[in-house]
Image 1 (tube, rainbow, N blue to C red):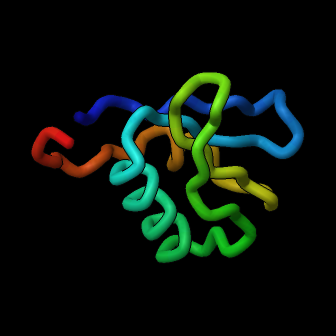
Image 2 (cartoon, rainbow, N blue to C red; image 1 turned 180 degrees about the vertical axis):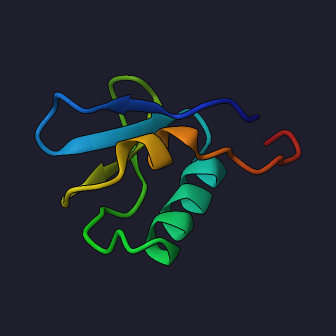
Length: 75
């Protein structure tokens, strides 16, 4: 399962959401490699049944929005 991340920039703190835990783990690692140290570990959102990563620092929004998830086999 792939697809773009969904971002909520209006929420405080901002967060990214995706249905795949593996995609969010890859995004979490990418964030760390690109200087975003203040972030949550991926966690399940029980309301939407998706995965979230909260962002606790200012980020380069266009760079995050342009991130492409890796291709994974079906989960």
